[in-house]
Length: 106
Image (cartoon, rainbow, N blue to C red; front, side, top):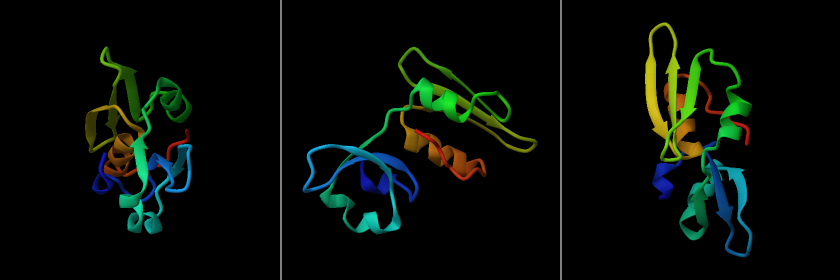
């Protein structure tokens, strides 16, 4: 994962330069100045995260795939987005493209 793949508000695991433990947090605008110095990793998308955020199939429907990723379909009156996602930040980008705010609870 590269810093240029991230957007403000994306969830990632970050290990600060002085730290020993990864912490999960959202990227802030200030972080882009120092991201190249930090060790960071994507947060895997899980069934638990999807169930917590999308418990009923209204506009967003999802299901697990055999390779461990998830197929997610988002549809409203004028748009249809179908994608295969492995990480939380990837789904956040698709939600923003769909017109949602990209907020996800871990």
